[in-house]
Image (cartoon, rainbow over all chains, first blue to last red; front, side, top):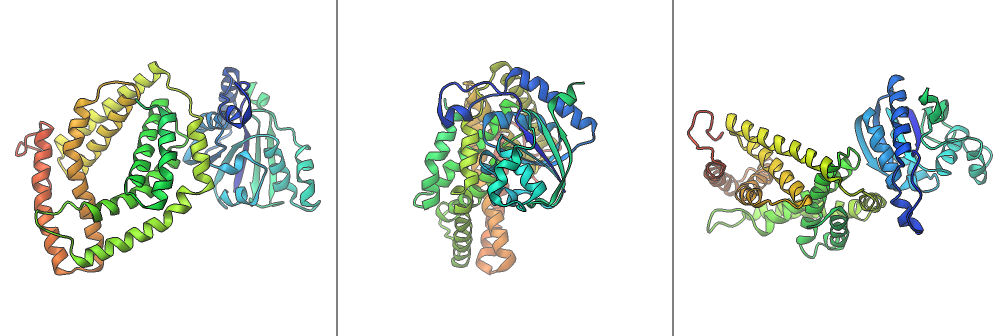
Length: 165
Length: 245
């Protein structure tokens, strides 16, 4: 299977404090404009999606909505994309097809490290592994393999700038 | 007039009642809120969350249909539920209810509520353009019904009409006509749902009393179908306007 990890596009700062204010942050107009180019770029690469899993935060939903232009299947909200990578998140990913996960940092790069390198350095290093991958807002990591720790290969890691050319 | 946040709050408020099963109103209101929020997504032009709400509406809908079938079955006057059918519906309801906690008390449900609370407000000009599309869809369903007057076409029209009503209500527009038509068509739909449940039962236990009930209800359906067509200004008997059996 193929997995696209997608960090939400550039968002506006929160109006207020706390998790609820953070949940309500919309994409910035510049974020929408730039991510549309990411979607067009992926489309030009022939990417079609069977499933989109998205975090429930508004900036992720709006990013997933833009990405849904590539969707042939279904989309689903996941509580596990607004939290540290977990077995529960792994359990939501099907064994086949091409799936996009729309979420946040630092969770996505931690998840990326976990999927690529597994636990061979110990689960306690999971957060540290994430720091090795630069995941820009609107960036996409494209993986292939089996969705389990250490079961995937990185095909590409696109900063959004790549698609602005 | 409730907006999306209010319907999300309505949904959240009815989850405990839906889970407890103490009052059939619980699952009913969960389903209503889910359907209304789906229309809000239409007005937003959103593709995401659509399947999540469909999953919610289907899960609650199964329980609701069975509860209506048991508490207010659309039976001919003086008739009662055959005991075998009643026992079958009760078993089905228990099974459907047993599935509800995995749906309504799940982390997914919490995430869905969180996502619904984060939906943006409607931009009126865009929402009105999308309303125009819903109106066009409803007109098309009515044309389809006129050309091919089957219970399925009527069902499709009724659903389009409901979506249109909810959309208008989100925009604060009058819905007197839609509500009046829904009233007429709702009774027929209850009958259709009941006939579907009865057919499932008969496939397992083709007992005489239930078969007789089915025959009586099919006659009733024919009459109500004609009434519904008349209410819509489609005269039964016209070329192309004859109820399918």
